Image (cartoon, rainbow over the protein chains, first blue to last red):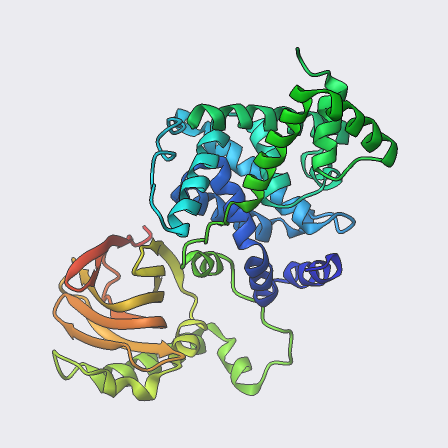
Length: 177
Length: 253
């Protein structure tokens, strides 16, 4: 969806238009859920965070800066909510091998699930700062500039974090295998 | 030997396609002479391909419905009120209209302990017109987010009227039982929006409903004297309870 389309929908949302809000929900529920899932490694937690994100968005449309892109705003809320969620009740993150040993078999689906689980297990070994840039770059397809805007850090910092994160992910995946 | 930071950065930039022609030439010359650098380039390229290839997770089926149920309703367009709206704007008339509708509903349905939904075809659509004009207080609500059924149920009060609003989606046929602790409360009516196939039966102390798919409906209870009560709700699919909740009505003192 283009920035113009988003802007029109947001204008309608600011007037309490539920249909416009549902259109945004349809567009963004999957990336928001996936970002939360990759941050938290738990579908139930990701669902709760996604619900919270969309409610916050609905309640705070007035605070949205129309000169910025909507996805920057909603992804930032998603990542902040996920990090807050991780901080709650000293949640323990899953053990490295908890999901990575699942699903060895001949089928492509099983192989795909195995790779996904291994990547997720590796993601959970790196800090949230590094995990965040990996998710934005590789799971949400954001550019350096967009990541810089979402995280409100210089582009140079984005690159530095991303490069370090990749190195750590690579090492973690080697360790898993 | 460790790879210089400069070349490590160039390798990453190359993988991301964020490299100038001059930098690319420099990197290629470096990789041609440095096996360790070449290995890192290959490993990181492979890692990025793996990350890009990970399939996206599908969000839970009912998540969108639950989110939409959590946001406030669309504001009505500002239009000149019609004659009926002007009449209903008067609180006493609002209540009278509600009471009249309740009486009609009650006369239609309370003559039998076991009721068929067929009796309610004529009242389909009354949820909005009966409930909305009433100055009803929200007493409580809960959200369901089970694999088989999701949505919201709320309890409102208006004088001696208790209104249970259901806004649910069920993948399979679901039986719902609303049992109220105060046995003097009696079933006063039922109305549904957008559909007419939710089944309902009532007996002393409880109402049973049956539904499948996306349904919106309301159950009206007469609570003479506005006594405190608890409504216990259970949701069953194939005989198994999938969700239980309670809603309390506590009169203001």
